[in-house]
Length: 375
Image 1 (cartoon, one colour):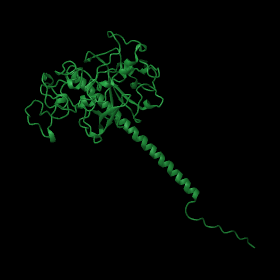
Image 2 (tube, one colour; image 1 turned 180 degrees about the horizontal axis):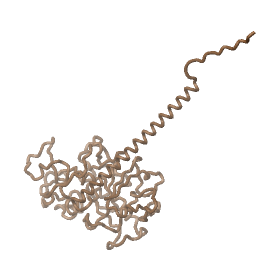
Image 3 (tube, one colour; image 1 turned 30 degrees about the horizontal axis):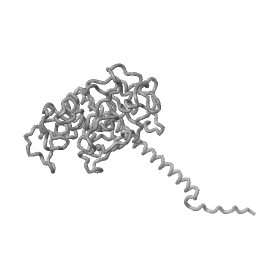
Image 4 (spheres, one colour; image 1 turned 90 degrees about the horizontal axis):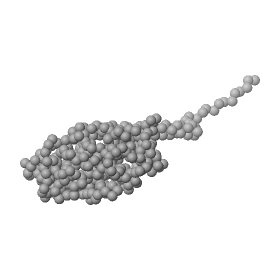
């Protein structure tokens, strides 16, 4: 008698619970990898775009120097400087557009840089804060009018052309561009300030033309020299960006970090001082070497950009480091490239943060900073 084989029960269609969990786990892993990869790719793309923008700005700075013989001065709020002069009040037209005096780190004549140990805390802090978020658009774009930089059309209410179109400068187009800033780089605000002002590089002391109003005052002022209305207009040296890529400086944090707003976020965006934003929405900062006696062509060789802590990398290659002023960690390591540089640009990078007091900060904010030296 032949034994019967047990019948095999047919397997039900579909997946078991275990198989479903495995598949779901695999899908989650794939999606997570894609999200991380896309996020990294997006971040790297913004880094690359920021680097390209900074390179373009540096090229524009070189073009400005070729046209004028000097790099743009540092603009900002003098009240941010230790013991600095009182500048234009916050909210007025010239706020953050005053010329900041070049730091005077050492008494006496211009000699070889002394040992960093001889620097006082006030001297060091002054140099660290001598930077600008507003210089780049002011000199490379010229987002003003004849009352501000000697060039362009002052429009009447509603955007109409002024009635007295015969006045020199009223028909100058395009709107962007600047009149030559003169020997001091500040439209005479240092070397030839307008009558009745304190001078010293303040915005109200810009001596543009005999009928140029001061800080929005349409009544004009007497005792002005029309020299700065003459000559070939300059720029724009940088291609104008859309409003979404230009920010307005609204205030500063305690460490001097500028806080900005985009168009539509504040009511007085057009009147506010402008800055160029990187691809992470933060202002690109401008640094330059100091200069002597209000002359931006005469470099002050008593200190260099190597003494600016914020411009230092967190890691050095072989032979890339030198010693300069000590940071808050008592670290004198600085970049050799900064020694000969005449200017620098700084972006806070993807994390949008920085520590301007120490090269290698504990939080790692400076690790992704983007710095460009020039020219």
